[in-house]
Image 1 (spheres, rainbow, N blue to C red):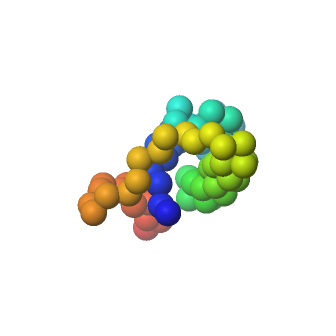
Image 2: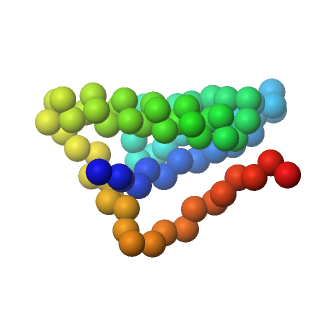
Image 3: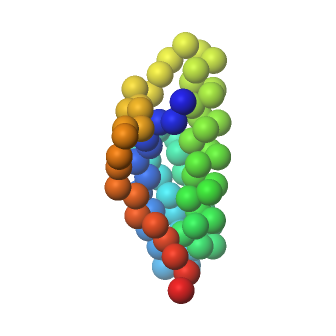
Length: 76
């Protein structure tokens, strides 16, 4: 089931991107591009959610609705 996880992405002075989440503690991802960082963050989030589920705990994430806004990143 798809869930919504809010991710904060910032470009560091070193030129790489860093993603964190207040929703999922421990989620930290770094990449060379914003897209790469988000892909890594998605994988990390999935693994953290699965690990938490094994301990019978939930992050209380919202389910995806019938419509939502999404910032699409395009390299043009």
